[in-house]
Length: 574
Image 1: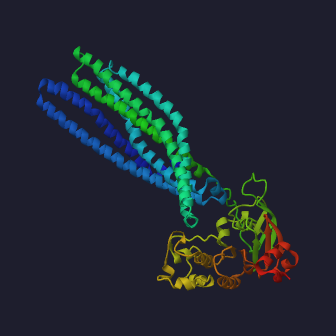
Image 2 (image 1 turned 180 degrees about the vertical axis):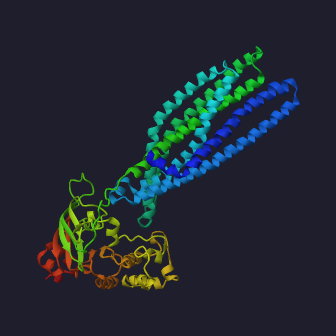
Image 3 (image 1 turned 90 degrees about the vertical axis):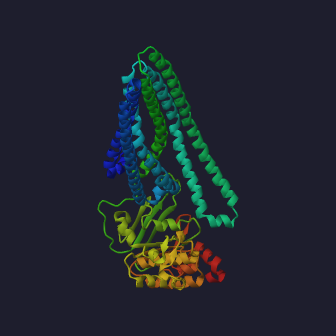
């Protein structure tokens, strides 16, 4: 909880001042019944109208003061809770940015979204309630008890019976309900997962006419959440009838015993009225406590989930004394890799090769052979399980991650564009680069033709995930973004799959011009994209089953010969 509480730091003045204003409101509320009793028992009973007026004006002044205290507490507690929630949300987001793919895979994207939104909102609401109701409830309860005892010790026996009954009921129900709220948050995660998958895959769903199936899937997740929420709420709602029953019995007992005291001349009517008000204040405070118990039940779960994010340490971290990159020779030395330590079969097995500066390395293999996993080890998106990946003779684990990744440009098969405009997307690659450099990157990526036809050119709007561009256009913009970065190591992960062969040929020519002191890795399904590479890696089931030039592999590698024959025909390997 220390991880969570530290985000209140910037709001401590408000956190202290808001309860003080609530104390003012509670004290004013506690004064009112006594003043009312004075009007009834003294002013009205003796016919002193001046006392009635003066005491009435006092009540009005006390009420106005209470309004100021209550309104001030509401304003300050709202600001403190919103500010603290914003800092917590930002802190969690910053923490997530340090995670490697391993931590994101473990915590899951939809769950992280729920934690940043729903869970933080629950904590925000709880903090506001703590600064208001959790101050008001105990003060009203204790103050009401003190004032009631001062009026009549005999009638105060009612509290001795009523309060233990309520306390036992609250504890019993709370212990049975806490686990339910944890399950509820997991069900919210599930709803978010289904919704996210539906929105991202809407084209596939419509293409396969899968709307009804998706409706049923969402309905299942939604009803599951509803059922768990109802179960949890039903258990908590049981408290309300108990509280109401205790209040009603307490009022009946007060009227019975209080009436006898009035008839016996041992207590005035005004004091009975004041005692009734204090009784209702005390029991209402207990009802507030019940409501807060429900809030705390959810807040406890939300706090644990947020703390899990903040307490998760990234498995990939910078070394204590990072080294510099000397050159850009990339070497894999007997590399094995598993996504989970418990996996019996590694995804990559005994990968060894060397790519020298200025070389173009092609990687080919069937789906699931480990091509994308292999290149993800170079920028340390994952760390190797065994062996080492080095650049310039230095293990990548000994390099500063930000410095390492600034030297590397990656273009993925699934192109991701960000909402904004084309220029802002290109400047991800080179934030301060001149417009001329951006246009050169567009030229080499074969994107100038369609960008120039847009009314706003470089400033054309890019909608969420680039949905206003075709797949081929998104790929070319992604390539241009990476070209603008001018990386020393360039990784193209099947990034031309959505472009035509003519455009691909032009892209290959641009790539050859851009190969400089670093290495270019090209993952492709088409032989034409890698045939002229200096080194070709043939992968199968997570292992390299052949490496060499196109001609060398044609002569001595059956797997490669089979791929070439399937794409270019038998005459190509004759």
